Image (cartoon, rainbow, N blue to C red; front, side, top):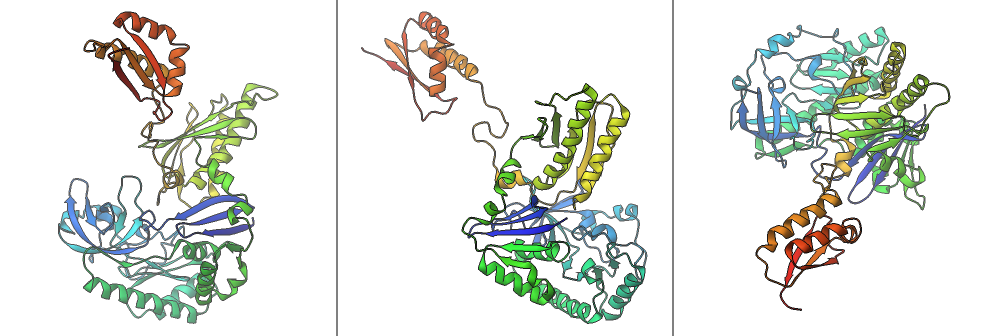
Length: 512
């Protein structure tokens, strides 16, 4: 599979697209606001402790108060290991622990948040999840500082090795190297990129990360509350750190300044990859050149058509995301069961793709077309699990029910694409519905009846949206006739293009 990164930089926005065999599969957007603050470290103040929820609200200087759960509050007497340090998508090896054994989850739960932090207390915390919708950022006082080869964990003494490094001899070499090199009790995660690298490079990066942590500590002592202590890398450099270095063959950038900063970054961490970076200088926009805009627009639509003629619909609710599969225009060639199976299998690939591209997280319910045969239901379930293997975000999929429903969860760390690029409809307030034109006509009928009791004029004028005017002159003409008879006055209708569909005004005319 050939992977590319395409970076489009404008004054107000930076977009990073990950392509697999020419198809966009992930999109990252930075507009310079508080929408993507994951990884940043802040000095905050505890606003309120909630014992009933075992959580607390913390002011870190964002528009919304951040929240911290009891499990994310640092306690010097508690050792936290693998469960807390899921850096990017790299899993840690629990066998490579040093000094002590991790305590059980049950023991950790015995800690009460009111015994760990108090209202008014100043704390250092790192954002683990950016604000999503009405929810503030999720933070943790367990700090992690990722580098090219290592991740520094100042509040732990754990040493972990990425499971992507499979050679046992190499794993042991790296573990021993870190143990021998460290001059403090800090914990470290050895990342996949460290495989085969000499100790000198590990030592250099370890020194860099320790100096960075020391500077953060100094800032914390003097900084006001709230304030930011450390910015994570820009979206462009994060893409280089997390994607180019590990799996991407080519990086295309359309901005000279960003191009230069990426090369400078690679000079420090991986000079051999500089040849993979290309400055785009074409006349047309880089996303147009790679035909990405159409796929992005498609990812914002409620309905997505399948090649066969079937389609899926994706509905976002407060509690979950519902995906519905329909045969649409596809009628098949042989029998109904085969038609349904083919549509469901085609839908599986599109659903997995849309979930990844849209970055949908939380609870997802997929309503496949009902299938009579258990073997066919198992085929669809297996196909979905296989399609989700390409997704770096952690997913959990339950078997299909007899009713054709699959329940799944996907780890959510940032706003989905639709939340970033869209906003609630000001007509329907995000409900997805507006009052029908017929209902509006009947509402006008009742309002005129209500107001006519206090009107003494010879006739009424009604100003409405042109679509409503057309309906009142045509299909609902009898309504106006009945209304004129009921109130004993002529009604003159005036269309107004500036009126919202539901907007109308009634005026009384006192003389001819």
